[in-house]
Image 1 (cartoon, helix red, strand yellow):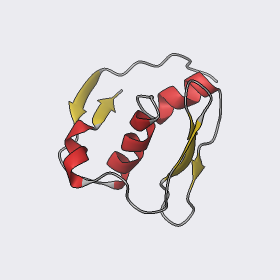
Image 2 (cartoon, rainbow, N blue to C red):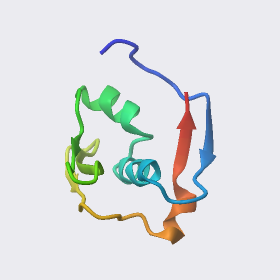
Image 3 (cartoon, helix red, strand yellow):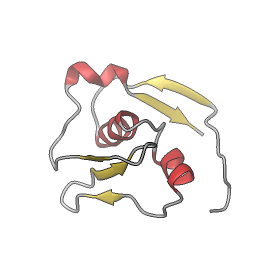
Length: 88
């Protein structure tokens, strides 16, 4: 991959749920900052997604176990403020 080791410039907490926040929640549950870090660490070009919703379907953690996610929203409103949104 070109541009290896991209670092974010700043971070803020999510205020309300969106599709982007949902996917960030899934990456952060699996131990990654976001999709960019996941692709850097796991050396993959594509992330498995649900075709209907576009949400992340499956992620491999750093210890090589897998997280599988549902098609529907998994990030409850009470969890939204824990999601970190990074800017590059």
